Image 1 (cartoon, helix red, strand yellow):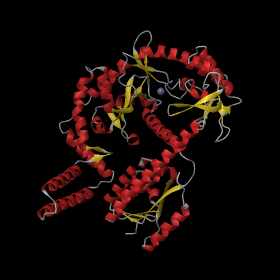
Image 2 (cartoon, protein in one colour):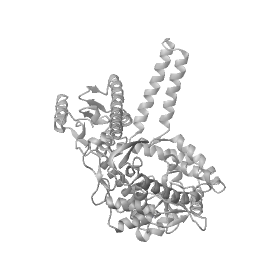
Image 3 (spheres, helix red, strand yellow):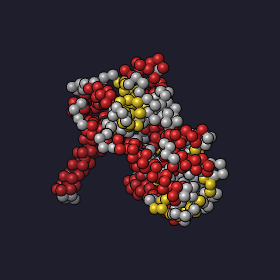
Image 4 (cartoon, helix red, strand yellow):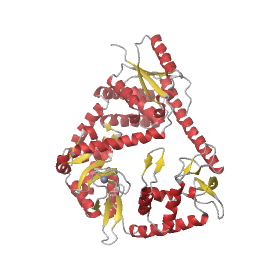
Length: 548
Ligand SMILES: [Zn+2]
C-alpha cells in the first residue's frame, strides 16, 4: 500500500486554498476508503459514483479538484471511463500535486500518461509481493491463512500444532484412511465439537467440501519418508516446510490412495457421456446457490441438485431438492419459444436504448455537440488535404474514422453494449429457439453460455418451474420481450417469470427475490472488504458547484 503523505485534513486544506485562489465557493467533499481507489469498478466506490452522478446532473457547472491523481483512480480503465464522463459533461479537472488542468490538450495527454504510470507501479507492487511469497516458501514458511489444526507463532516463524484442534485434524485423516466419505467425516468431527475457523468467515461447521480440501492440502503431509516436517507449496513447487507435519509420509500416501479410489468411483459415471446443458448456469431461486450436476446410480437419470444443505448453508426450500436435467431443458425451451418478436422490434429496442442512455447521462444535446465537432473535423481534414498537408491515403483514413465515430453517435450504447450487438443477438434468437429441441446437449450448452450469465437460470425446485433468468447484456433487451416475464427496478437485468410469481404470491416471492439478490451483493461486498487492508486512509475528491 502506498503511504499517504498528506493527512485527510491537509488535503482538504490544500483544496480549500486552491478554491479560494480561484474565487470558488466552499467545496463539497466526496470521500471513499483508500482500498477502493484501486478497484476496477466504479460501482464499488459509492462516493466516487455519487461524484460522477453529481457531475452528470450538473453539466458544465462543476470543477473537480483532487489532491493527487491517485486519489482519483489507480486503475487505467476507471480513469479513462471517468474522464470520458468529465469531457462529455465539460467538467474541468484539476489535480493539485501534478499541476494538471484537464481543460487543455496538454493536460489531457499528461493525464493519460500518468494514469498508465500509476497502473504500472501498482502492477510492480503486486509483483514484489509475489516475489516475497516465493522467497518465504523457499525458506519453508507458509503463505496465507493458517490451515486447520495449526496456529501461528509469528510472522517469520512456522506455524505449530494447535493444542485443541490438532486432534480434530488427525481424526479427519484417520477416518479417511478407514474409508469414510467426506460427508460422514464432516458429521463426525462436527459432533465431536470441532469447528473450522477462518478470519474470513469465523467459526463454521465442517462440510464435505472443507473436508475434501483438507485431505488434499499437502501442507499436512511429511516432506519425505521419515521426515517430520511438512510441505510448503508455492506455484506448483514443493519446499520442505519448517512446520511439523500432521501425517507421516506413509499415512499421507494411504489418505491419497483411499481418496482417489473413492473419487474415481464417483467420477467414472459422471465423465464420458454425461454433459449438462446448464452446468454452472442453473441456481436455486431460494438460496441463489448454483446447482450441482449429478447422475443417479440406479435410474441413470441426470439431475441438478441444491447443495445448500450439504454445505450447511440456509435455504428456505430445504436445500437438497433436485430437478431432472431433461425437465430443466424442456422448461427453458418453452420459455424461449414464448418469444414473439414484433415486426418493429429493432426500432423498439433502439428507442428503449436511447431512453436508457439518456437516463445514464448521455443527453441529446451532448450528442448533437459531438456531431457538430466531428463535422467541423471533416471540413478541417478536407482543407488540410486541399492544401497538401496530408496525402490521399491519410485523407481516406481520417475520413473513415470520423464517419465511424458519427455512425456510433446514432447507435446508442447502454452498459457497454452497443445497439448493433443487441440487434445481432436478436437476429440469432429465433434460430436458437428453433434449434433448441433438436440440438445436441453440447450445442444447447453453448447456447446457454451465449444467452445467460453464469448462474443465470434461477429454478424453483419445489414447483419445478423456471423462476427467473439473468441474460447476458446483449440479449437482455430482446429477452425482455419474452411473454410472461417482468423486470423490477429493484433487480434490473433479472427477468422474473409471471408464472413463478403467481405461485409464490402467498409468500410474496418477488420480495424474497430482491432480498437474496441484495444478500448476494452484500456477500460479495463483505468479501471485498475483508480482502482489503483495514488501514483507514481516504481517497479524497472534491467538487465545486459554483452558484449560478
Ligand atoms: Zn436452495
